[in-house]
Image (cartoon, rainbow, N blue to C red; front, side):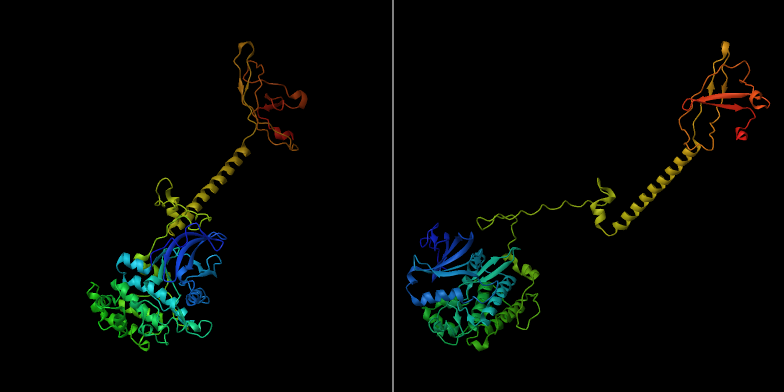
Length: 501
């Protein structure tokens, strides 16, 4: 991929009325790719514009148009989505507007790291194979598979997601509106990954040309260099190199890899020979079959879903995370939005505090930790029952004590203290409780009765004659007065008041 040429469209330029150019991302054989902002939606997109020197070529214009529509009917997360395609009236240049990818292409990743691990390679190629199976089923051959056209972007969970790029020289096998392109683009491609039938310009190129390229990509990722790199350095011309490629790989792949310090299993040689066989009939039939066989050779277990009737398969999320290795990028919480005009993501909630151990202060045995285990639940219920029973018993006892107090407590009459006349010492007489008539409905009075003092004779008690009114023998009596009722109660020695009722 050529170096970016920012001079084609300057940053800040408005292209086609509403695409604001941010920067030039890259330039290729057919066009330049820019990061732009769609002023209608404020979304960032990738704008691919045909190079000015190619605008006048009808063939290149047709090929550029093909890239916009060739995968329109294919639904796959591993194929770049196209949103707009037109010819700019101001410049006369055809253009495409596609989703803007965040990440890097496989060629740059390989250049930075030297080589990838077998699990990473299986993951990358398995996703590419899924997209290839769908395009091949639609009668489309990419014909220019190489590390530069395999882009690594990332999902929200940090796992890598592969995107296939540049279907500009794709071949449509079915007859139709693109049938005229068949013979005009038969020999395009990149030499280290071109199949023999592409080099020879045969008209029978089919999807197995992509499988040939996929096998050479696998070797380059494992070793760090394409298989044909040594031959390109030794041979004098590109034409000689192409003729050498047509004859097929003569040296076992494991032997050549050993010179680069890479040990490949012996089974890899048989796999590579079949995958890159000079004649298409000797190769794998499906891209997914090729990758599954490679995984077995490299000893990488694939947690594949059951095969469907169409032969499709996929990896579970657990396997993707496990195989990603160094390609995994942990998501950054609260990272600013890449889309201007949109609010930044809501930062994540802080982590919950750690639970305390059972019985730890200040929470005690009813801490969250104690209640978090099933064993603590019966103890919790038992404690609640015990506390409830104690409270109920205390309530019942309190009610009983109150009833007894109310039953036996009445107007507490105090003793009558009478100062003695003439300096005689007063005599203290116990007061009798007040007796009410049966017809009285009033509640017993609880207020204490005050004592009344009466002068007492020299005898031990004050006496009054009772026979004058009752006609009975007189008996000595004592009197007390309740201040609340102003009533006087008499008490006779040896006399029962109930007999008078």
